[in-house]
Image (cartoon, rainbow, N blue to C red):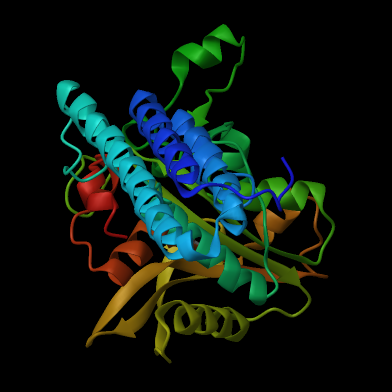
Length: 347
Ligand code: PHE
């Protein structure tokens, strides 16, 4: 049939009616959104849709019948459109019923993925590495199970020294025997062991920090725990003085606390430094102790094969927990190690 062949009005209406009936049926029969969409394209598609092709016959209607034909076309278009919308609503309403049958309450809040975070001690360690890195100190590591040479002997702590008492150390008697060792291995009681390990393997100058766990058989209370972390610092060069040590500690404390805090040193004693000091910083109206330090004892330099007449250095050992607790106003060290997530996720 060519487009200029005339079409009678009632023929046009008949075509529209049957198209509408067929569309309504197809929409009703669509069992899912995909089928419904295919049906929509078939009947209502803007370019190839079947309604569109019937609409094209409008040009062949007698001029006097055109208004009536146009009116009918609009009616049917609306009818097919609303039939489609009804089926669509029906489908999504069916979905709601299915969800209800599953006894799921879609109005409940979703399950949020739990986002992990670093432990406050790990965060502190990262920050200390960052600050000390900017002062030129490179991180070094050593084992947590140590031999007496690195934990004591090389640090100028002889066999008879009370610091070697079994009551003050975790000796690994059985493991040492099984390994066939004469000397008793132990869990390191200080990170000063890493000073020795680094100097044994590196010629001077040295500028390192070592951050890690140390162990002492202390009874746990608000300020003690049998395991804690230290930051050891060691600088070996020529003509190193206590003034250099104090400057580094001052720069460190000022960077860590974010304001210019005064630092003081008090006389103390450690077998591996001479002179030895305790260092404090002034924070929130009081002096807070941050650790022991001093000028490396010539005996220590000798034990690692350095020449005490040619080089000198300073060392310090700071408590990481103490720094972390001051920063976050934590009052009980045990809170850091009970794995209480509600506590830890505050930091
Ligand atoms: N190792 C000492 C301690 O655990 C701290 C320290 C390190 C002191 C280095 C002096 C020099 O208490």
